[in-house]
Length: 253
Ligand code: URA
Image (cartoon, rainbow, N blue to C red; front, side, top):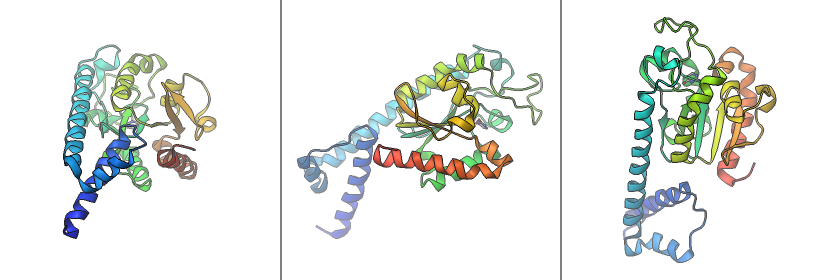
């Protein structure tokens, strides 16, 4: 066999095995490994077809939830928003970030974390050696919480979501988690941490500690907007992200 062909097979095998692992498989029978490497029985083709179909199904499921969110009027945020902000990223992400809620930029574009805090979040993700498209990014509320809800065109009109708003919107995040099934959630800032863990502990105390939400590991950290205000927080956030990387790579912290 030509070396280039073999390298191509190995490349596809790597992608297939990573997909296997994304799907929660952490073992593969040694005969199957031989099948993978020799591409016996068209293993790679059928594995790729299987995963492509599965991912399309996941995308469809997420799109169905997105449609529900787009016409949601369960709370007053639905009256003032310009756009719902559902989430973005990979439908089979192992890592999911949950922020507090869309701001001005996100409300205008319908995409999460695209303003200054979002750009910093992208840098954090890249420093972890992932791409933004590899992870999933969402918020605990899907509409822009505004100080003055009659003025969506005003800048600096953001506020944190209320406990009631988070509780009302949580069902959508739960549905997203049900489809994506990440291995670990990182809550960004006090709001999403309190909203998911249902506690009142200050973020300075909870950050970096291993928690669980609906059977999924969770690590709270500071919100990137807080890092913009206080660069001294970058170090603890990086400490927290190292724990996340370690968990994703070894299954342990
Ligand atoms: N802050 C958040 O918490 N979420 C966003 O989507 C943007 C800024």
